[in-house]
Length: 395
Image 1 (cartoon, rainbow, N blue to C red):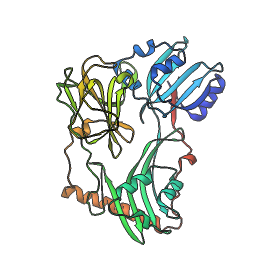
Image 2: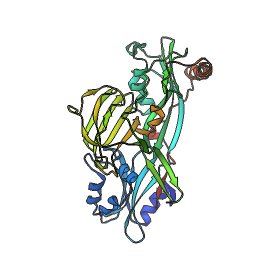
Image 3: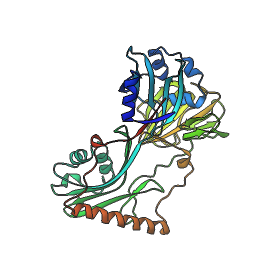
Image 4: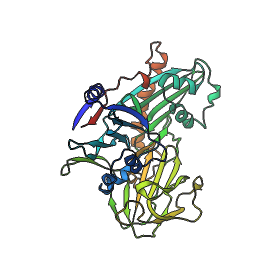
């Protein structure tokens, strides 16, 4: 395996006559139909281990993938990201046979603290400064009960601290907003994210966001497969990933919604078989795969309550036995559900951690104030101005 930065990839393509395209994954396309399109035997897929088959079901429509073709249009190799950390790699080996492997995504991550003067509107000025369309929406949701953004005028400020991942000069996933200040007519309003509970608090430690803690959606006998983002297998000499938690349970056992939300998908999803996806808001989604069937009345678009019956444990799709595959996603990124399911609900900050948290917020407030007062304030990095040195893995 070689790790080659983008400039060297271009040289590789010239030397080996491979054409590179960045394409959105077509709606309705599965990994199997992709193989058929390029006359690759489906045996490549059916010979995969269970975890790799499930990864193929994580491919999302409209997500960018990287296609390398020969001059005659035949496939040389393809890179298909399935999360912020892992990607599927299908390639021709020296014997001209197609192989499958999973590889880590070597992304660039940066953190910025910036102050943005309002000249037109919150959404327009944040988009113009950062090149991101989601930050304004997140900020407005954090202050929806305490700030009237329509009262913001020219000369008011928004200061924010956020981190962002980039891959080959393009955004990867959603930005992570850790602190924000909205200043209207000289009066500041603050929100600070606390890493322990993923909630936002003001400068006094008062919480303003709903706790998104989920219940385990069924009674189960054991966890048959745990969540792994990317892990190097020392025996197989390859990366493995399992973007969910598998609960072994008898066929027909009832499955309940892990939290309140709206059903975004109810149907068959590739190797996941009969699947339900629930959108819980605030960036959270849960996925329930390999079901035997859905509860009566379940349909796409309907609202659902925590603990409400949604389906039954089964063995549909590519599954080696009855179980529930539970996926949890935050802003499109797979996360370990057990870190949330087993985490106690925190109603407020305890005295000791509150003191530390408030001390940290004081430091950020000073940085915000300095940025606002500084005529030579930091210019935000737009992704279209980024010189990204992300590495890509190819053979």
